[in-house]
Image (cartoon, rainbow over all chains, first blue to last red; front, side, top):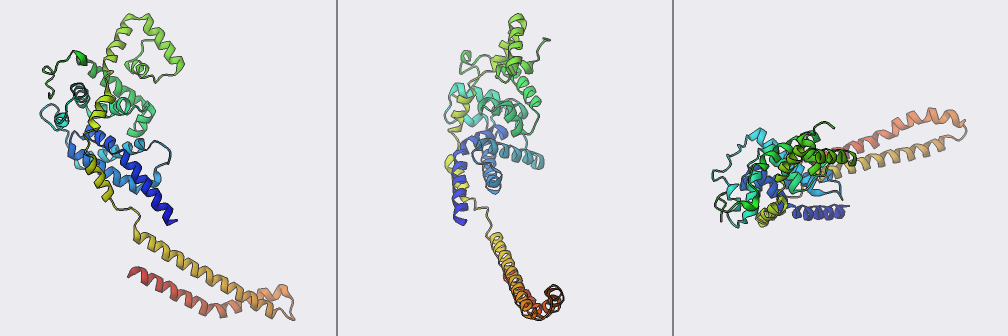
Length: 176
Length: 154
């Protein structure tokens, strides 16, 4: 009995370890801050281990984890009032690609990062993680209609940018 | 079909519509050049999202994140399992006591059944007998329970 519990926790931790990078980038998308992103991942791991019993084995663990991270972020925002920093003024999000910039990737991330939080998280879950509308609605605890509205609004904003391939490095001032 | 909303057009772009709705919408887009332009405008937001964020994920401080994960203690609190064990032990003691009690009563009943009608004797014999014999039994149970709870508090 004790042995079985120990093994399954070990397996659980191992699977958790597979999703760290994924959680981190979602935390970064939400918080726009590398340190906060790291703390969010840690808090998500703690909560995941505490509530390991709620995870249904065999289902997509990342969906469950992303939902945990999101609810932690929301409660952080509400209780500690973590401020969203303005975009485009040398915030850490802008420096996210300072280390190894790939121009196209940097542009995409910059554009998504410029969206308001609700649109940002919805675009991320639908288009980066590839979740269906229903799955996104479950993770964010919102109606599917809201998911659709957010995506439509976000798309209209993203459509305003010039196409990626016509943008030279200098005009969009990405790190070279 | 009335003019589709941006939400519907986006859902079509995202392949989230049912077959029937999809064909209706495709017909509408084919018939309406302006609607077609609107769809093209919305599809400008089709960007290589996954590639971009996969590159970002490579920058995750994996070693540190993993180290912090490894440092999280197992949420199974030892105190909790100790309590559980004590409760289980107390329950076992109690159950054992009840069984011993029953066995003793059964033995008493069969002994006093000699010479009297069984139907009435079990009724009349059990109460005084149990009252008399269960007292030390209960006392010892109370003692062991007390000992268990004292142990728990220490």
